[in-house]
Amino acid sequence: IQALVVGAGAIGNEVLKNLALLGVRKLSIVDLDRIEIHNLTRSVLFREGDVGLSKAGVAAMRVGELLPEATVTVIEGPLETTLRPSMIAKYDVVFSCLDNFEARLSLNEMCLLAGVNVVSGMVGKLLHDAEDGVRRGGREDDKAIEHEIAPRQNSPEMRLCFGLIHARERG
Image 1 (tube, rainbow, N blue to C red):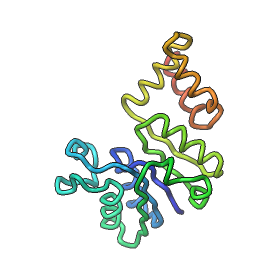
Image 2 (cartoon, one colour):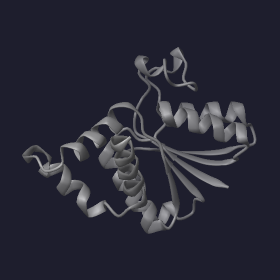
Image 3 (cartoon, rainbow, N blue to C red):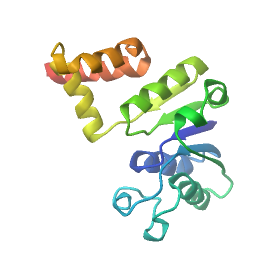
Image 4 (cartoon, rainbow, N blue to C red):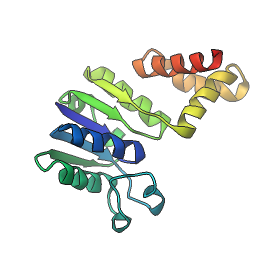
């Protein structure tokens, strides 16, 4: 299996650790950020001495420590300029570990075009913002959110997201 993990923060750390422990030997990691001190409390692959270093680079190094036979490719930069559907098509699965909703939609669209399954994780404020935008519906301040989401509502990620939101509201 060849996996692409987009985002090497808290969720990406957990995904990468688990993929390594499961023996997945072909991984690529995409991230544009550097490690900051506040990342250390929720990122199992980062240490205090890593502050200021590339999240993707350090995560790749730690995956190599967990699974020495792994081949890990590091892709640094924003996904809009570093990934294309043609690049994504070579992977068996993509893990979306992003904390930016627009970036998640963009990645989902690229995966859809590439015909590659995407596994998406979201926590905290991102889920709250998505729920809040749906709950408030037709208010004036939601027109921008509705306009931004509407063209992509039929994507698998959006159907799942909205399905979860509606289920939580009813019950």
